[in-house]
Length: 258
Image (cartoon, rainbow, N blue to C red; front, side, top):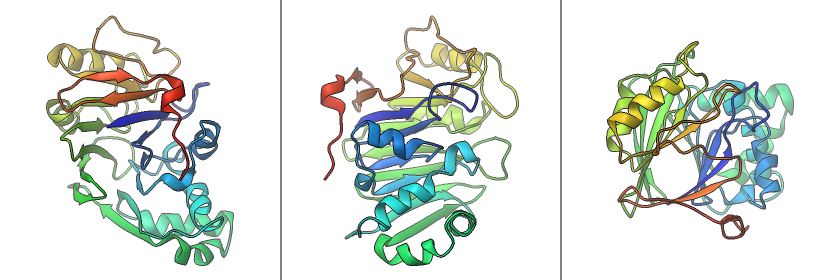
């Protein structure tokens, strides 16, 4: 499994907002500027076949309309586009289009073949496109927020907490993942977000697990834990089912359009 960090920052940071792309086809979150960031990395947004949304805050969701316009206004898909997120996903997409580009959603839907998969407070599972995806409820400031466990056909498991405090679902992701990306917005947890102290505690409890801090605040700059790896915007890693994590050289990691 290849993980490309489109962005790694929180709102008030010069890093791009947090988002990750797996195997050039599965996108986690569509924050402000993420589609342009993909283009700058020579990643064609049309390669995305699955899009997972953790919650509906603007810095995780608002670029969804640009992803959908890339895929349905400029071209026509020949297969379904799988859109997974909290309950109300389809309704919110329609509303965003109505307030930004009225009439466009109705025009591009036939070209997209969108299939919405929505999960509530209990989370749930979906399988397809070579992945088994488990949505886990996490604790944030929105009515529903989800973390994800994503397993590929080789058995590699990538965990992504989304925005959350340290909670049972985060502990579960740490127990079951080959590598885990975690909300690390502050030095200590506050306002619905984890702190670096939470991440380092998990690092101590799981010394063989690579932890990727993301959604970084400006005060979070590093850790002395050897299994805490701070990714840069645009950086790519190869994950193995045995927990190995290997940085991919930039020339190799540039994902080509279809």
